[in-house]
Length: 116
Image (cartoon, rainbow, N blue to C red):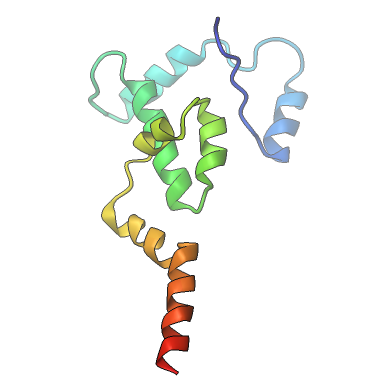
């Protein structure tokens, strides 16, 4: 059974779609995507373009402060592990896992109390 995918959009895009009227919004989205990709001179293996786009979206979503659980729902993944693979975060971005970790704050507070 094929999954139905839903993507959140902002009000401006929603209005643009509603103003478009009836019929298809994009006459041939796959061909438009391929043509745009060729214009950008990206070299990707056959069948990998949309896959790369999903990975890029996932990485930028997280880098810009997105929530991993929201991303999991957006991408339609059944497991958080798969979503984590998609993000390809660099070690610099993982530093936040140390500094923003709730346990880190607790440990710092304990250290402050112990040193007082």
